[in-house]
Amino acid sequence: MDIKLLIKEAREAQKYAYAPYSRFKVGAALLTKKGRVYKGANIENASYGLTVCAERVAVFKAVSEGELDWEGICVVSSGSGFAYPCGACLQVLSEFASELKVVVADENNFYQEFSLRDLFPTAFCLDKQEG
Image (tube, rainbow, N blue to C red; front, side, top):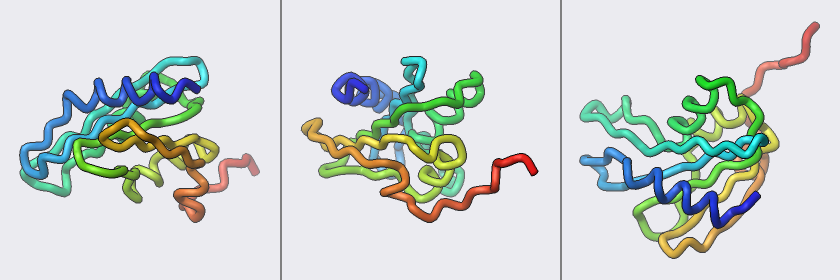
């Protein structure tokens, strides 16, 4: 996984964030095992509960196009420091890729890499085994 390229893709996505309320712009880039990148940006709403995070936008784009095998996701923001995926995003990611690599990059593109299980060890999951 080329982390610097994934950070670049997430920064590109961040340009399209719609954040008139928080002014906190987030971009995400989701890398599939086939090498395709799905990008997402946060989209806010005056009814704040209807806001969607960048990570979920990228996930929904991938899933809606039949891409379910992922290698990693990168998250960048307009704030200082690292912006980690929220609990809702971690739960959505865990639905599809419990072994996913998660990269967060700060405003200077310094990054940290985690496994999804490290960030979210107690995800709610249905038993996907047939029985």
